[in-house]
Length: 317
Image (cartoon, rainbow, N blue to C red; front, top):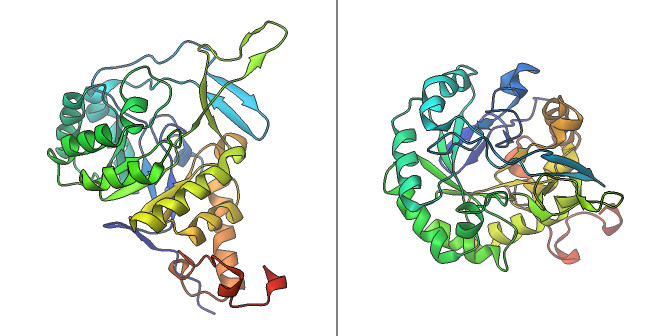
C-alpha cells in the first residue's frame, strides 16, 4: 500500500504535514529543530516579537501543575531589529515555512511590526498574538474584545499581503464572536488556543509559585478546552483553524483534525519529550495506514456529531 499523503492546506499555506511548532516553546523558534530533522514539521511559528526588546517577567517563570504547567514568561524577545538581523535568517535556513508571531501594545505598534515583517524574505505568514495573558497591556485586552480584535487585525492587514493568522485566547465569553471579528478584520486563518489563565500557590510559603501572581496554563489538562474551542470556531466560521493545546500524542493531534482543524500546534509536549513531534507524526501516519486512508485530509472535519452519523458499529466508537 502506498504511504498516506500527510500534506495539508491551512488557508493559503500548503504544509508538508499538519504539525506546526507553536510560538514560544523553542527559544525564538529554532531550538527544537536542532534535535530532529526540520522536515518533521509542517511549519514553525517564531517566538512572539515586539517592537522593542523585552526582558520578560521576573522569575520564577514556570511552575509544574497536575497534567500541565504554568508559565509567566512575559514575551521576552530581542525586538524586531534583532529579529530581522539575527533570528529570521536562522529560521528560514531550516527549510521549513516560517510564520512570524507579533504582538504590539498599541495599534500603531501592530502596524509597525506588520510592515517590518512584510519586508522580510521567506515569510509564510504573520501570526497576530492578541491573546497572551502574561502582559498588562495589549494582548489580553485586544483578544477579549471583538471590537479591538477587529481594529488590530485591520491595522495589521493594512500593512501586508502576507497570510495573517489571528491567535485567539480561550479566556473569553464567546470565542466564536472573537474569531468572526478577526476574520472580518482580514485574518486568513485562526489559531486556538493560547493558554488559560491559572494560578499555583506554595502553601508553606503562602505565595504564588510564579514571579507574578498568575500565568498561562498549558499541557494535557487543557486539551479538552482547546478541542471544544476549535470545533466551535471551525463549525461556526468555516475558517481554516490551527488547533492546539495539550497535544502530547498522535491521538490528541488526530482529535483536533477530526474535529475540523486544518493543522495542529505542538508546544508543551516537547518539554517532556523533545522528540514528541517525531513520535506524533509517526503515529498519525500509522493511524492513516491502519484505517486505510490515502491522505490525512480525509479525516479533517470527519467528526460524527450524533450516533446516527456513525458509519461503523456503535460499539467501535
